[in-house]
Length: 157
Image (cartoon, rainbow, N blue to C red):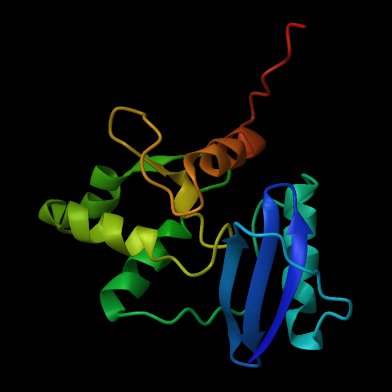
């Protein structure tokens, strides 16, 4: 496994993967040293994340290899079908997966997403439109949703 640390507008980001695909993209809450030389197998991921943050990319085209249970993988797969700039609720995601009663399991799988931003778990909100739990912190979830919003809020001052 290769890894690197890059900076993003939301903090230091760790990327892990190998020839089988990207296994982890995570936001770090501590200050880290960025990687001087990006491993070749991670270069596309770094470039695509930089394009996303600069507003030039709305979807990712990467070989992914997240590690989890079959149920978790089914949730993560469903998350990848939420379009850029759109949101869904945990309830709607549960319905889409065929079991409305699995809402808590869906929420747990969402929270264990190992591929921050690439598998867009930040696009899942509460049924009432509220920003609910986010492993990276609600301030980051809000930033990501605003970043992807087609309606940019202008400052009044």
